[in-house]
Amino acid sequence: MATASSYAPSQSAALTSSHRTVIVASSLGTVFEWYDFYLYGSLASIIGAKFFGGLDPTSQYLFALLAFAAGFAVRPFGALVFGRIGDIVGRKYTFMVTIILMGLSTFIVGLLPSYASIGMAAPIILIALRLLQGLALGGEYGGAATYVAEHAPPGKRGVYTSWIQTTATIGLFLSLLIILIVRTSLSDKVDPADPKSLTKWAEWGWRIPFLVSIFLLAISLYIRLKLNESPVFAEMKAQGKGSKAPLSESFGQWGNLKIVLLALFGVVAGQAVVWYTGNFYANIFLTRALKVDPNTADTLIAIALAIGTPFFVIFGALSDRIGRKPIILGGMLLALLTYFPIFHGLTKYANPDLAAAQEKSPLVVVADPATTHFQFDVVPKPAGTKPTFNSSADLATSILAANSVSYTIEKAPPGTVASVKIGDKVIPSFEGGPLSVADFNTKIAALRKDIGTAVAAAGYPAKADEAKMNKPMLVALLTVLMIYVTMVYGPIAAMLVEMFPTRIRYTSMSLPYHIGNGWFGGFLPTISVALVAAKGDIYYGLWYPIIVAAISLVIGLFFVRETKDAPIVD
Image 1 (cartoon, one colour):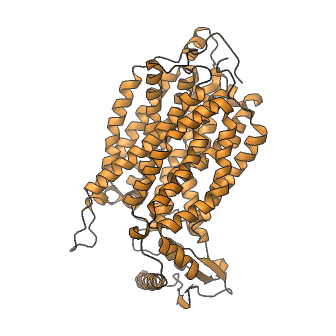
Image 2 (cartoon, one colour; image 1 turned 90 degrees about the vertical axis):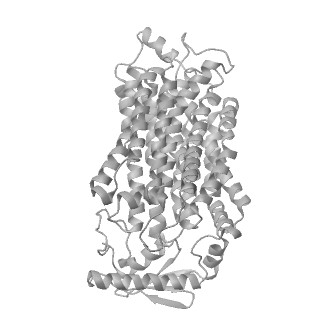
Image 3 (cartoon, rainbow, N blue to C red; image 1 turned 135 degrees about the vertical axis):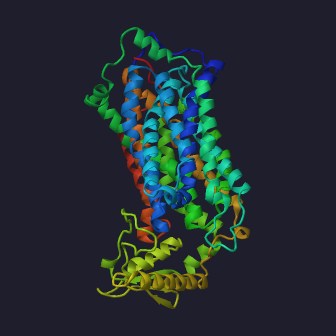
């Protein structure tokens, strides 16, 4: 823990104009981070079709999520690179570099040619941009949180740094707003004479939100150029007390490495999965599982974000009074206890016809368990070829998963050709392996039609009926999810800054934050969607955030110390 020193931040508790400038400038990178995050996630289906065109629709979506997650995978490495620079060279210089890299990477996605234009080069360049951005993001948050905390007066670090968390939501809200404006403006219909024609939105309009990010970059650079170096860091350097080897000091000495591990597994991992579930997976659940119109889903979530955003500051200020741990761990506990009833409630109020059909006409796939697989094909297939997973069971479950229909698997004897039971109707599948491509395409089209007809006859709706939605209840449930997000995320920056000494703070706090949010959180959409597809239960993906939050709750409760009264300087 840090100890008291002469080079402390201003003792004034008032929020001065210079404090506001520090908070705004530091927070703009977080706006950028989450603007891109939600932009990419909301447009995953279009990005999958544009850049992974050689795959089937389900794999396109999963690969788009994986490309998204690739940026999160390298964030810890960015934390090491830029954290070291931040502890040696300075906070301001480092997050000037990181925001330039982030902004340009987001902007270039809007210019990138599609798979149809340049083939495999398109997904390769897309993934490269995501990796570059992930590296930059690894250095952004730690610098922003450290910079603000080192300017904050004693007893105000929770509320000051909570503004960074608030602007994360502003980034999400901004992305939703721009998507809604552009998509609504370009919502023209396809050409009836050309069934393969696209709307202007699907053809090129989706690029506009990425291109708009260049204005965010310009504003961010303008404000950050006006900043001075952190006073705590500047005086520490003047006194010759800076670290010459922050990596070895942070992770090569057990005393500090132990705190890094506790920060990761006892605080950040649980915070990350709660954040991603409330702010991102809820949108996936509404649009893919419940078939809510994307504009409606975005609007509902935007309202919940607007209602919930002030609670970042409320819980940040409250953490200055009662401590960081009770609020962060309390948010995790509430989440893991209530996720299942909340998401069942979303189904009831967003798509009551689907909820009724699931109860009255459950779907069963009768199959040999040995022929059912976790269907994730890492090798792109040209359009029109047979999928890698072409057993009768895999074909039946893939069609149901593509239609977001829950099902259970009933064990059948070895060698049985799988079938789908919907009420009293039985639809046989077929073995795709022995068939030619032409015969396979004919039979799969017929199977899709048969299953689709039977599913519709059983009361499963093709999409959510907006007239039957209970939108106030949906907003209420989404707001509850958002409140959980504010509880775990509002005080997190202050807590991480307070856990580590000044000389290695940037490096030490950045790594657990980005492993937690980049790996545990960033892979949540892919893992949860894959779990749903594998199990056939639209709620099964919730087990991932629940288990991770439960682990963090236990470790945090028994092994992580309260930090609110810890001095910020060495």
